[in-house]
Length: 317
Length: 265
Ligand SMILES: Nc1ncnc2c1ncn2[C@@H]1O[C@H](COP(=O)(O)OP(=O)(O)O)[C@@H](O)[C@H]1O
Ligand SMILES: [Mg+2]
Image (tube, rainbow over all chains, first blue to last red):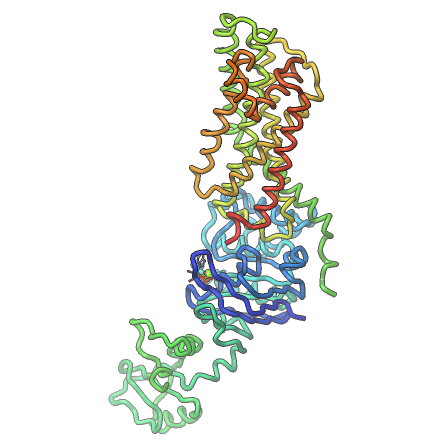
C-alpha cells in the first residue's frame, strides 16, 4: 500500500516562482521517509499541497489511494500535519488546542480527552495542559504541534522541519518518540535540512533542490556513494612526526590528533594495521563530518561553508 | 481496506466539527465579554438616556409613538448588526492572521461546516447583544412586543446576514485595518440613514427614494413592525430583501472558501 503518491507535481506561485517541477514521489506504508533539501528547495510547498494549504498548479496527489481532489474527506482524515511554523491559537490552552483538533476530526469528547492525556503525557506536556500556549517554550510548542497532529491517530504523519530551533536533548527525545510511533505503524514523512536527522531516523530519503527531486534512494546506498571518508584519530601520547601510513593520506591536526582519509577502496582494518606497525595507539576515532552532509554538498555542487575545510569528497571528486 | 473504518463517518465528523467550531466561536466572545458584550450595553444606554429621555420629549411623537419607543427597535438592530459583523470578521481574520485557521483547513471539515460554525458565533453574539439592549430599553420605556415571531425572525435573519458580511470581509482582509473599513464607511452610515432615528416619511421626495435603496432600512422597519406594530414599508418586501441578500452572501462565501481565496496560496 502506498501511503503517499505524487505524480508530476508542479507549483507556480502567484509571484511567478516555479517552486516545484514535475515532482514524482512514492512513500510506502510503514516507512520513515526523509525529505531533504536546503532552504527554499520546495519541501514546505510539497507538504502544503499534500495538506491542501497550497493549491497545486498541476499533478496528482493520493494519500493511501485517495485523491486529494476527488476524495478530500478521506485523504484528509488519514493525514496528520506538523507544520513548519507555529499555527495554533496563542490564547488557547494546551488542552483546548488538542480537544478542538479532535473535534475538527469528528472524535467524540470522551475519546478526545483520553487521547489528549495520552499524547500530552508521552510528549511531556501533561503538566502544562492548562497553560496558555503562548507561554510555552519553543521546544514545548513543537511538541504541542506533534501531540495535536496525533490526536486523530493519522496513518500518515508529515512533519515539516519539526526540530528546527529545538535543543539537542529535546530533539533526541522527539526522535525516540517518532521512532516509536513509526514502529507502532504510523507512516512518517519528515522534512529536514539537518542531515544528521535524516541519517539517524530515515531508511529512505528524497533529496530535493530547486523544486526537483535529484535523488530518491535508501540512506545506505546513498552513503555508499561517498568515495571517501575522513576520520579524526586521537592518539595516546604525543607525536614527534607525522607517521607514514602507506597509501593513507594523513594530515596532523595537532600533536595528539590526526586526520586520515579512507577511500572506498581502502579498509579501516588496513588503516589500523598500518597504525599498529608504527606503534601508534588510537584512543578514539570519529567521522570528521556528517557523511550525508559531505554527500549532499557534492550532489548540490555547492561550495562548503567558509568555516569548514574542504572535505575529501571534493578533493577526490 | 482503505482504513476508513477506523474513522468516524462523514456525517458524524461534520456534526462534531460543527459543534466544535460553533462552541469555540461562542466561547471566544463570552470570554472577552468586556470587549464584546459590555460596550454595546453602555453605548445603547447612552442613546436611550440622551435621545430618549433628554432630547426625545422635545422632539415629540414620531409615527404615532413617543420618540424613545420609536428609536428602541432601530437601536437594537444597530447593535445586532454591528456585533454580528464584528464577531465574525475579527474572529475569522484573527484565525487567518495567527494561522490557526489552518487547523480547520487541513482537517476533513467541509467548507459549509466552517461557514456555519463561524456564523453561529456571529448570530449568537448579535442576538445576545440584542437581548441585552432590549432588557436595558425596558428600564426606559414600556414596550410590549406586538409580533414576537416577526421580531425574533427579523433579528435572526439580520444577524445571519451581517455575520455573512463579516465572513466575506474576513476572507478578503489582509491586515487589521481592512476589518474596520466596511463597518466605518458602509455599515455605520447605512444604519444611521436606515431610519433608526427618524421615519422616512419625514424626508423630502428624493431622499426618501434614495433611502429605499438602503437594505438596512428594511430590516429596521421590519423589526420595528415586530416590536411596535408599525412600519414605513411592507413587511413582505423586507423579508424578501433580507433573504435574497442572505442567499447571495452564502453562495459567495462558499465560492470563496472553495477557491481558497485569502486562505490557500
Ligand atoms: N507563498 C509563497 N509565494 C511565493 N513564493 C513562495 C511562497 N512560498 C514559498 N515560495 C517560494 O517557493 C520556493 C520553495 O519554498 P519552500 O517550499 O518554502 O521551501 P523549503 O520548505 O524547502 O525551504 C522558494 O523559492 C520560496 O521563496
Ligand atoms: Mg520549509
